[in-house]
Image 1 (cartoon, rainbow, N blue to C red):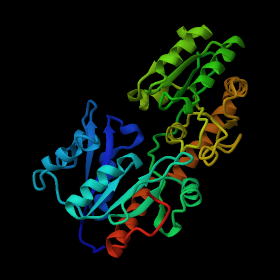
Image 2: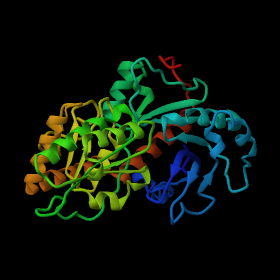
Image 3: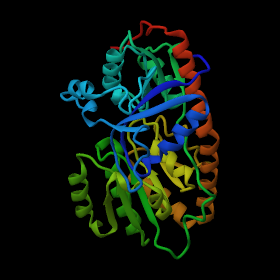
Length: 366
């Protein structure tokens, strides 16, 4: 890649006021400081402060819908706020079809960030002609991709997402306060929220006065609400949408629980740790890389509400220990998820891809 500024088009989903832990404008600024001019094409941007100047954040909802995609692409006009990119970068695996469609229309390569584990028996669908690189969000995820899908290691780059940490937090679990225990993610069976509710019942039965929050959207919400009702804890459980996962969410939490039953990169867990919130995670692939037991948090077996309740009670009864774990977790995020290191790694990938123009190798991709 030449030293002159190159144009990169980033494909994102829905952007909100806090961008789910991804401050998009500061990210674009960091890219610009390294000579990369980037724009974001997103499904929708919202939030009280918006998402910035129109020439940096461009909405195109139809692009991410299969039946509307062709029409949405035809309506995109280069030169009307949208610059012709030298490279398209899809920031989520689910955006690969949109990246391919744009790459074919403009005759430019694309790279694809794999932000979650691929389920057993699943395959990645990428273009052998236009896709130049896969970017794994973690080292453990990259190992899974090479082992399960036979992706050549030379075609994989590992770039952990940059996470900004604020000032050193105060003690999150304070004596004589009603603690708030939270969890977040899609409301699906794999998130383990049924276990979270069962553990909540056990904590309350132990005589502890506590509140519980589930932040997320998904098809299982009605079932989870019915479960809370059957457990008799409806008045202690709040169901909040994804927009609740912002700074105010982390400030109010005394503990955070990631109860996934399947491998996951644990993006929301990493955000909790970045804010110094003492955390408990299930012992599954991906989360193990974030939580070293009794060092940066506590680990419990998946789908074990008794173990989860015991871990919650342990930390609530020992706020000093909880604060120690939260402090160590925050230090780990600062070390391994540095926003400046993320941008440096991405720029290196962009330079390599645009310089080599190498086709996708023959791998177990479909």
